[in-house]
Length: 399
Image 1: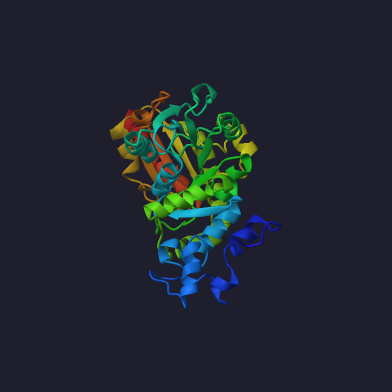
Image 2: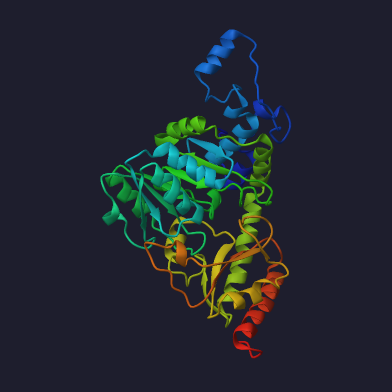
C-alpha cells in the first residue's frame, strides 16, 4: 500500500496504488490482460504456489498490477487491511455473506437495505440455513440479538428511504455478542464516511456507482480489517471471484476525479433539494444533509459530506399522476443505478419490501440522482415535471 497516511484525502486519491514496480514509469497502472502467468524456474513456481495471495504474478484470477492498484487505493482510503474486488455490488454483498456466515448463524439486516440484499437473504441465505431478522433502522438492535447472531448488515443512509443509523451504537451492540458489522457505504463513498474507523468489520462499495462515475462499468468491493480479511480472501478464491483488468482500469480512472465530482454532486444536490423542499407539490425531501431530515445530527456527526442521491415524497397522486411527471422529463432520465455524471429519477414504492417497519407516506416516492449538469437546468426540468404532476392530479389548476 502507498505510504500516504500523512497526506490529504485528495492527494491519496491521486497517488493511491501507483507503485513504480507496477507503472514502469507511466502515470496510470497499465491494463494487464492475462490468464496464464509464467515462471522462470521451478523454485519460483513453488514459492508463488505457497503464497498465492501475495501481490506477485501467480495466475490472473489472483490479480495483476491493474487490480492490485485498485485494491491498494481503496484500502488506503478506507483505512483497511485489504480489499476484495467483485464483478458487481451485489456480488460483493454475496461474497461477504458466503465468506463470513455458515449454516445455523443468524444475521440482522436493516429494513431499509438495498432490495437485492433482501432478495439474497430470502433466497440464498435461507437455503443455507442462515436465519435472518430485519430491524427497524431507527430502533435499538440489542433486543433482537441472540447467541447465534454472527453479523449485522447495515446501510446508512438507506439508498431509497434514507434513514440514518447510529453505526457506533450498532458496533457497541455487536461487540457484546462478538458479532461482525458490515456496512454498505455506496452512498457516501470513502471520501464522506469511513466506517472502519468506527469499529465496522467490512465496508462494501458498489464501485459501479460514484467510484466508477461514468456509467460504464460493473464492480463491487469489500474492504476489511485484519479480523475478516483472510476469510474474505478464502471465500473469493473458492468462488472464483475476480474482475477484468479493463474494468479495474476504468475504476481507477474514476477514482482519481472522485473528489471533484462528488463535491459538485453534493453542491448541486443541496441546491435542488432546498428548492424542492419549498415546492407545493412536494410533501417531503429525504436527504440527510438537510437540517429538516430526522437523521441530520447523525449525518453531521459521522459524515463529512453528502452525495447526490435522495428521494422526494409527492403530495397525493398515484401511478398515472407520477407518469405525467416522469415521462416528459428532458434531463432526468429513468434508469436504475446512480453515481454517474447524468441525472436520473426512479419512482418506487417501498411498501412491499418493508417487513420490520411499515412504510407510510403522503404520496408517491421518487428517487433522484443529481448529476453534473447545471443545477438551474435541473430545477427547471423538475419544475416543469411537477407542474405536469399537479395538473394531472388536480386538473388544469394544478397545485
